[in-house]
Length: 172
Image (cartoon, rainbow, N blue to C red; front, side):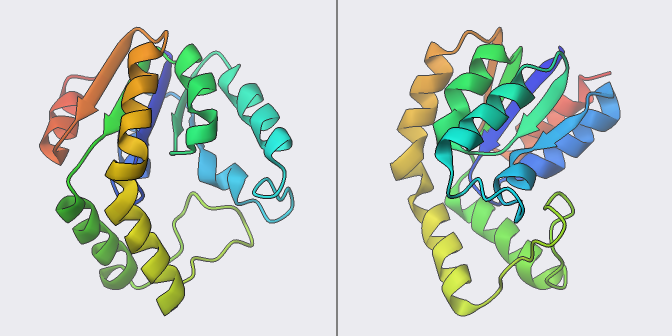
């Protein structure tokens, strides 16, 4: 296992799983949001540059890439040995988002780029919760199709965090 792709809705635990898997395997992590939200590169506004950047990241020999940028998913699955889809229920994800945004003291996620700040105003919270509530309806089918079509050797769909924990226990 040299290239692992982890996808799922915001708040599903992609970064947390990536860090735990890195601790077991030593593989370097690439958090796609670190690049996508980089205030210096403006990838949000430049789709072609964003796709080139992801191609370059996926061309590396060893990595854990985590994120859910559906526009780049096919490029990553073509190169991954293992693709993990965290297909958790809305309830699990909403609980995790609440914990992250309130109980953890509104800290910015450590994987975000320098100069980026998590926005905790009502509009931003409403957007992220609506995105999560609609994630399965909007992206789940597309992700499942891409997983089925991908050239990767192993496709894992975890529907509960305990499945991810069990997977981690099997890693060396």
